[in-house]
Picture 1 (spheres, rainbow, N blue to C red):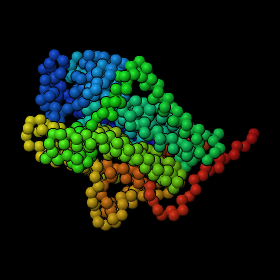
Picture 2 (picture 1 turned 90 degrees about the vertical axis):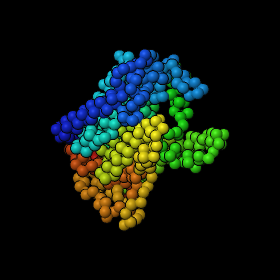
Picture 3 (picture 1 turned 180 degrees about the vertical axis):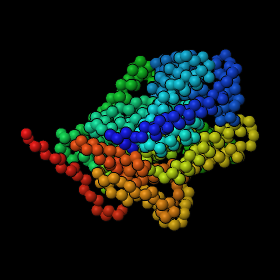
Picture 4 (picture 1 turned 135 degrees about the vertical axis):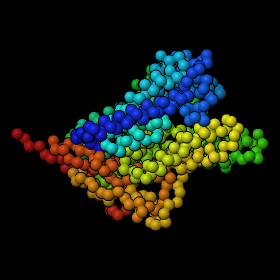
Length: 532
C-alpha cells in the first residue's frame, strides 16, 4: 500500500482490466436467466425454470417483481409493510441509497432482462473503481479481487459493488498525504455513505475514531494544536461527520415517507433464520429445537422458540464480537503505538458474517478487499474461496433438487461444506498445539522509519490449530504481522521527507506475550520552531 509514492501504473492497469473481464463474465453468467420470452409483467419465463439448476439466479432479476420496481415507483415515500411482513408501495428491504440505485436501474427497463442490464451498467463502475484503489494500495495481490471467482459469481447477484467501493475508498483516503483529521473525516463520510447502502461499513467508524484519538501512526499524526494525550476533539469530529452524513441522507425519506422508510428496517428485523439464510443458526442451532418426529403444533412452537432465541442471541453476539475486536486493537496499540483500525474493521466484519442470522453468498465481496490488503496467508485465502465456491454453487443446486423432489443428499453435503467450512474450527497439525494466534505474531520492529521485511510465518513450524475459513480469517486479521502484504508498505510525508512505514503495525492487534511490560503509550515531543 502506498501513499505519496505511485504504484506501478502497469500493475494497476492490469488489475483494472482483469476486473473488467471478471465483470463481463459475471454479467454473462446472470444473463443466462434473463432471456426471452417474457410474460405480461416483463418476467423471463426461463427464470423460474433454470435459476437454481443453472446457478444464474440474481436478486436483481428476482426483485423486478414484488417491490413495485417494475411499476417505476419512487422508493419509500409511499411505502409500508403489512402485518405479514410484505413490503408495499415501492419500499425495498435495503437502506435508502440502495433503493435509489434500484429505482434508477428500473427507469429505462420494461423487462427483468433490461433491469439486469441497466443495473449492471450502474454497478460495474464501482467494481472497477474498487479494483483501481486496491491496485494502487496493494499491487499484484489486488488480482484476488479482479480474477477471483467471487467477482464473477456475485458482482451482479445483488447491489454490493457500491458499498464495497465506499469501504475500500475510506481505506484509500486514509493513505493520502493529508492531515489526519481531514482525511479521517472524509473516510468517515464514505463509511457513512456505505451505511446508507448496506449498513456494515458504519461499524468501521468506531476503529477509525480510535485511530484518530490515539494520534494515527505511533501517535505522531495529530494536529499541532493537540496538546493532550488523546485527540478527543478529532474523534468527535469523525463521529460527527459520520452521523451527520447518515442523517442528511435518511432525513428526507424519513420526513416524506416515514412508514416506508421504517419498513425497510422492520423487514430485516422480522426476517427469520430459514433455509435461505445460509447461517450457522439454521444449520446448527435449529437441530436442537426441531426433529422429524414432531407433530405440526409442536413443530410450530419449537420453530417459534428457535427464532426468538436467534433474534436475541445473534445481535448480542455480533456486538460482543465488535467489542472484542476493538479491545484487541487497543491492546495491540499499547504494544506498537498505533491503533490497527483496518484489521479491526476486517475482524468486525468477520464477526458479523459469522454470527448474523443471514449469511448471503455475496457477502464474500465485502471480505475480499481485506484479504487483499491484510497479510492473511494465501493458504487460508484459498481455503476460504474453495468453501465459498461450494456454498455459492451448492446452495442453488440444493434448492433445485428440493424443488424437483429429487434426492438432495449430495447437494446438501456441499451446502454444509460451505456453511461449516466458513464457520467451524477443525483440528490441524499436532505440532505446536497452542492457538492460531502464534501464526500471526509480529516479529518485526514497529519503528516508524524502519523498512519492514519479515518472512511469512512458516506454516509447518507454527500451525497449531487450523480454523476453517471465517474463523481463521478473524484470527489472521487480528494477529497478522504488523504490515500489509510484502512490498505494499505506504510512505508518509513528515517534514517533507518521504519515509517508508509499516502501516499495519497500525493495523493489527495481537496477543503477543513476550513483552511482559508493555511500553508506555506516549506522544513523542514535537520539534520546536525557531523564531526568525
